[in-house]
Length: 161
Length: 161
DNA sequence: CATGGCAATGAACAATCTGTGCAGCGGTAT
DNA sequence: ATACCGCTGCACAGATTGTTCATTGCCATG
Image (cartoon, rainbow over all chains, first blue to last red; front, side, top):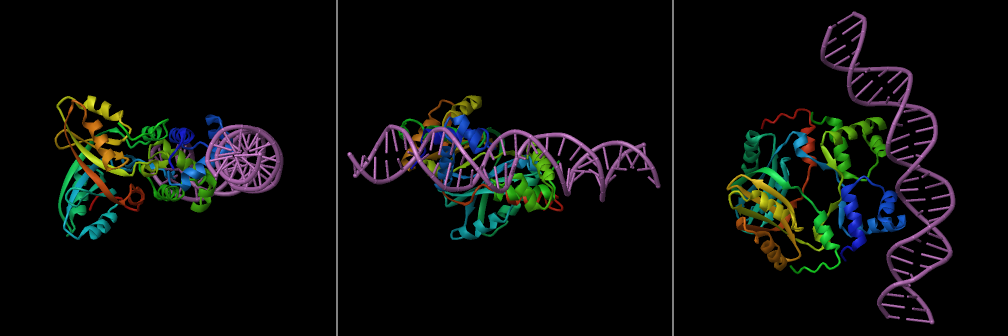
């Protein structure tokens, strides 16, 4: 299990130029086309690569405001709250986290004012006791995976510090 | 600006079957190939679609533990802290948020024990005063965009409630 | 109402890539 | 030594891509 150095380079290449084809990738990596195809198939079947979904920018859709909300849930209401949040389009992501049996969700909105509407909708549900919201101002490190891939495919990926 | 109904359907289609080609997409959407090509070009040039980066699963790379850490930063140390965190591969994402001039970052680790190592590395920096970590247990709503696209491309996307 | 601009259509072409199969060639584990 | 596995190179038919062009319907402007 895991990824070797070639897998790592392939992933990096795909991250840098996602629309690249198998043939071109094989040229860049200096291996046979069949090898790249086999690696790609394996990476996908083992779940390392979940897919190649388009990376859509919410801001460009008219939702430039991002926020994280920590929700305090009433005991036993977890499932209901999850179902409720799943119906809100502005909820991009939801996690249950340790702490107070709470949840953390990522929200987007059209404006700060609109964020209020979103939050009202999110917390307007019986199972939610309280919500604490933090608005994102900057995003110095956008979601990334290459550094981790590099580490995981490195010569010795011992978890050690 | 914004996306119309056809853009919306195209984005949904791409989200569902990322490896689909322009030709096949045009067949599915019932429009001419040139139209799909033009829409795609426009979506990319306007930044709605940032790219098609491979969606890599950290868990499959050997990092099954995800956590969110809220960091309290010493005044004026923001830039240094950002630079520091950018060098940590396990930091997948970093935001500056409202609250206490703090930051929120997403971390992954090989295990709960390993998470300790990661956190030590993250907070082992002069500019960071304190860190509060929440470990992710479940992820009921994985990062998604389709519902928002659907809303944004809907007949009347008035921000109103 | 007439004109100009814009987006979509349908078609055509050369060049390229994909899916697939096959035989040869190490390197490794048994 | 022997079997197994992954990589290489090659070959082929079929499908897709990048482009360009002329035509057409629709909308806003004049």
